[in-house]
Image (cartoon, rainbow, N blue to C red; front, side):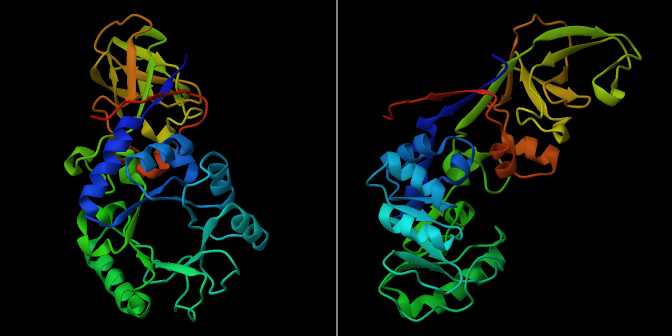
Length: 336
């Protein structure tokens, strides 16, 4: 085994319950697009529904169709644009669609997305009432409270005439920080997976990371002063230094710009050094360790939020970028 990604479905269920507690009566709709943010859409969907989520949100009709095949009774909502040929598929599969151009497809439940500041998919004004319209929504552009509150107020004013429809605005950040965003339902993705929408420690908001990623030291070698490891000699030892080679690289999703990130080697934080290659990375050690020494890339206190800061990226991008190559396993814990 080169590396293994473990998904803790018990943690996901606890995150769902935490979000429901914060929502205080509003529905939780679990966002499981992009294969559940790389965690496995079906497993995460089932866990979220079991914990009290009442709907599942995807980005595309094919994503929703794949879930419908396994979850015949789940409420499924496609948040992204759809092709005309996909309308019939959605109708047959009882999938709800989001309208972003004002055109209401017949005989399929739709939600109309209003532009309040995101400036992307959505309409500028609500269309005339239609019996197939079951909800209205908007998409917050930022976690900055000032601008988010402006968007929320614009949405509230624009949708008062259709307040009998399901109104949904909140994402993970707004759910946790802005009570006024909650309306009838909130669409939560990142927080459901135990990742902070604020780039901080998820525990600050009562969240538990769902994904962990582990490997081992495949080779330990001593570099003499002036010797290097990896492509382009980006790491040259200033003195005799032990280096561990871990069989994980950007081909697995550990990106080249994560050089300098700290990972655990036998429980101790150690820096990744040199150029991350496609199939391996190097970690600086404070002494010799045997081959097979455990390595934690994410988990056990090593937060993906830390890696995102090193890579000047966001957790969404890093988590979705873990490739299918690592072995996958899941923990199914019965909640007390």
